Image (cartoon, rainbow over all chains, first blue to last red; front, side, top):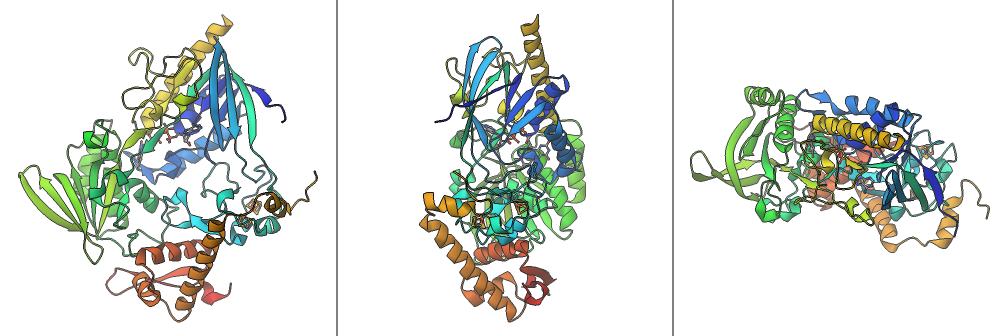
Length: 433
Length: 96
Ligand SMILES: Cc1cc2nc3c(=O)[nH]c(=O)nc-3n(C[C@H](O)[C@H](O)[C@H](O)COP(=O)(O)OP(=O)(O)OC[C@H]3O[C@@H](n4cnc5c(N)ncnc54)[C@H](O)[C@@H]3O)c2cc1C
Ligand code: SF4
Ligand code: SF4
């Protein structure tokens, strides 16, 4: 066995979504050396996959791309992809040691020109997770067109090792001899920005997700609305019909004790209203109905955004969905309690979008050795002093940014990352004084 | 050990045999692709028309046709008279 390579940085940032990226950038601009460990093939987290963002309707890619390229070009930032911090140990103040494991990509990203010839040559088609399973991708693939780095990767579990990609590659950057790498990372402070997970709607069988193909998640609709969408236009996945009567079910997996998540996901109301507006734009003949319990439009410009969607013709029904059933033609019957009228009603739609909630991604806490990283009741990272220093965790020197602390939107994630980098800086300064 | 650049897949294959399901998936995709392309060669079709002609569930047809669109084998034609379903056709009349 070869010795593990030892690397030294000022700060280890775990997670390269918008929160981790922003925190890294702030710290790097103060001249700290930062290592970002990202388990996926690209920077940008969930945000880079969105269509447009509420409440400004700016194109998500247009905001994310420059940010992400600034992060990846910064001389003080090193990024490891397909990597996870397996063990994080606090040996003393300003002295952390992490064991980072990196899986091979089988492509040397520095030499890859993203020419896509490997993709073209590869005979294998598997489910494209970056398009939320709506279409396929090759086993040799560029994750998505605005991925950063824009470089190919080999999906080794689905690869037949036919060698076609390698033969097609003009730069010779595909390398199947790559192996797993392990590093020991020494850092003075740690920022955790591991983000969130989406609620799995299979946990609510009465909504029919998985069984009825025209019931989709809001993330699948984000992809359908994005310029780099999976289909030629917005189509229902059951049979390719252009939908003209779309329903949204808010609070799918949020504020629902029966699925173990009693808290509000904070973004579902607003992203559904956003999608409603975008659908009215793309499918001018379509009806959009949003079934809600309460609309939470608390942020700057949010209520105006909500009012605007009503003016555009989005219909809002205060109703609690009982169940969803499919008709022979693929249309869906929603049985719901009309809360204002106190009556049980039924309505037919040709497509249903489940506005799935924000769940914690708590695995990172298992990586902490010795002193464990405390989580809150819902599995998000506990903030030691939420009022005075919101990014402090229970471990001095470990800070937290973005949705790793709880559900929040992009502007709040950026603010949170700002707070995390400021608190990290003041911790690092204490080492000097 | 020196492995020749451009032939590293072969080297890996010697040490890590490919799983049966992976070969099975390739076979299924190749077969479905051929059936869809053959059906489209006979004329432009919508997803329900392809599903009926080939007895493949419509959601599976959509998934595969959209994948073929992405891979550059198929292109989108006109929408039907009811403004519901698009016709799909072989890209550039099938010179691939
Ligand atoms: C359908 C939908 C639509 C939305 N629309 C909007 C909108 O219009 N406007 C808006 O403001 N907000 C919107 N949001 C919310 C927005 O997505 C989040 O606020 C934002 O993505 C949070 O960023 P983050 O970096 O905290 O988390 P994430 O985006 O989840 O990023 C976390 C990153 O950490 C990585 N990671 C996780 N665990 C590990 C680990 N153990 N080791 C290494 N890396 C790890 C992940 O791969 C990922 O890259 C929407 C959310 C959804 C679900
Ligand atoms: S070796 Fe694997 S990734 Fe490359 S073309 Fe063949 S199946 Fe695709
Ligand atoms: S063929 Fe080579 S250079 Fe082109 S995208 Fe694939 S890996 Fe990159």
